[in-house]
Image (tube, rainbow, N blue to C red; front, side):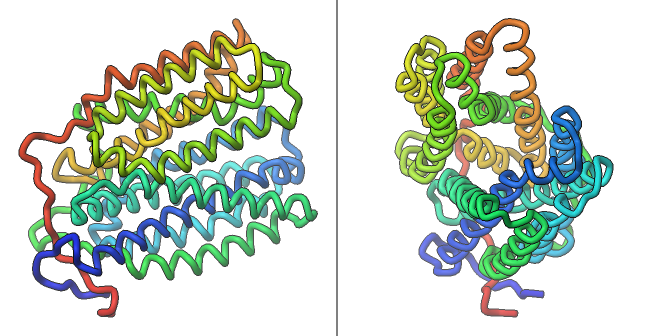
Length: 405
């Protein structure tokens, strides 16, 4: 185990700068796992012989596994230290990437997806908690950029999976190789993250605790953003095809453009947050997202609809990173608060696509995206939950040197 270096840190400490690069790489590895798996879902469906309804059931299992396991992430970090705990959870996530392609049927697939979701959720909590701590030590916003690196990793993983699918490579070989490569990268990049350890009298966080009111308010902010993001990612191509009448290529390009817009906005978002603060940034984002939703609902041409989805992406891009950052500073147990917000956002991600589909079936996709527009614009109302308490100061902490092993 690493020893800790005593003393106070400052933003110029090379270990803190190195820790920022390392945790950014962790986010990218996490995103690459997700991107690789998403592209091989059709192969997995074909080889397990299940229909769309049963596939939908299997795809809810990651959210269930994550919701059950995320509260345990804080205990892992408390017992083993933040670096060793994150390394173990990220390695478990990378290894679980290979499991779904090995499943012969629905029951095994549901179990594999639940394990994958549990590992993903716990690693998500651990890396966001370390991201918040790194941000505090640097004294400037970095969470949006970290989530931007997740998007970059997801895009890279999707590209790798697309190449594998187009070349006829089986998902067992593709996901097995990806798991090995990403596991190796995960071990390597975790070497540089902060190694924070509890004080001698600090109690372990509870296995489960109901979120505090402040965490629920922050979670509501994340819920609005993730609802709009999930709906846009899953339904933007369908909207252009069925409502606007676009061909398949243009419809697919809209989803890709939305994802790229989110990634670019998150990478650039820290500068905006540093200048205007989280509350004003999210309120402005709610206005942009609301305008984007209006463009989508009123669109008669593909260009107008794509511009609307682009504004939606710009408006909501930095909200989830800011919600995690606010949760991490909301009380004495950051991992528990982050787990609470993550559970709410995972639930939103799970609910949004199905609710949009059911509402579209009962009415129309235009009505469904009116709901998306209202939800996204609601960010202007709930943004105040991200306000930093007055007098909050950036804390300092002992940082373990990666060279001391």
